[in-house]
Image (cartoon, rainbow, N blue to C red; front, side, top):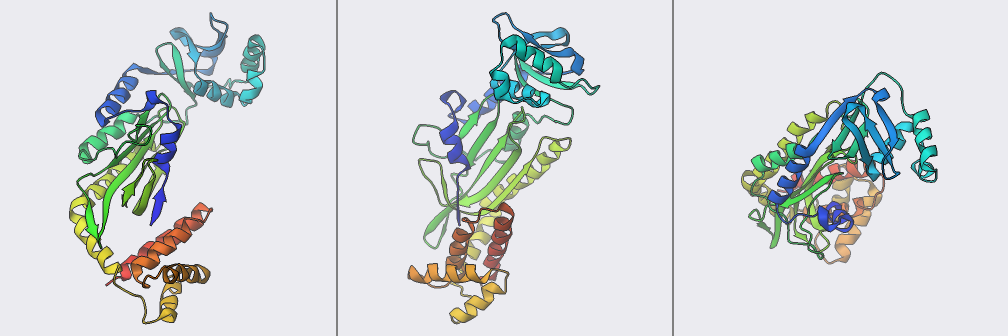
Length: 343
């Protein structure tokens, strides 16, 4: 089992105006944000930095007029110009304006500028494909409508966040608890996206035992993660995410019984008559020998039996210390398959 910290990071990084009490409030905010936003496609020659009335840098967009830049769109403009943001900030406004004029792309491919009211939310080239938050939240409404936010965090945040830059959604099935060996597990998921290119679109589904006031998800199992960049095929992520949501919801009903049977069996099943046989069984499943020895030592030193469940638990804790993502994912997959050995 592992501990998931995505929601905890959000809890500590969000401002109160980006926090929502209910899913419907989050949905309404994202709906309004989408309605007010306008995606403008213009040739590079018609997207030009300018000095606004207050003396700040802005952007002139074709015949649409002048718009202010926020911190995110200003950083993207610097990226398109391949000029360091800190360097531009140290220049006088007129000098910075000239620097942008000299370095912004002058090709034929259009730029897409997302605006809301009188400010720019984002600036992208043609390779970026936008996916609106509402498209994801509509899927949640349709396929996981019974899922709810967890209990509020220590600062009152619920796990539902959104702003001009991105959206994050933490939901659990409060009716999906099952008892396994005297311990309770329930399904939940994280869902995230950015309409302006700040982060990927993705989902992480899991079964868990508890959520603390810091919104750390403790003792999570059956963890599945999917994400995709906002390139031309980003909308292909929608059926993938829908499939994972459907699978998770089904596990609250149909797969719940199988999950309980498997986990119950894992708590009593052993992989050998003694430690030597157990060691051979684990190494034969592709678990490195030094990891096997450490896991068995963890289990025996705690006074527990060398059951499939206790070994999977210990192995997962060891895997969580591996920094290299690819190596950790490969080991997690092998550890997960050990549960199928429970009889």
